[in-house]
Image (tube, rainbow, N blue to C red):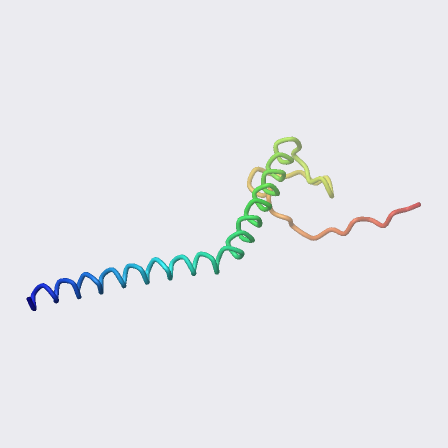
Length: 89
């Protein structure tokens, strides 16, 4: 009889722990969902920007701002920040 009670107690404890882990994982996922969505959106935006940079590189071999030639090694580096010239109306 005592052995049978111990088995039910152990089984209950294991089930309770499993239920707690499941509940904790669900709450954690709910809490992190907005942050993960923001990160995914940022990742999509960065991928689109890099895709545009790679496409521009394939289309022309010079910087679109200053017209200096780009080599294969440094086409993705911005050497200096160049301000747009003022509009002359």
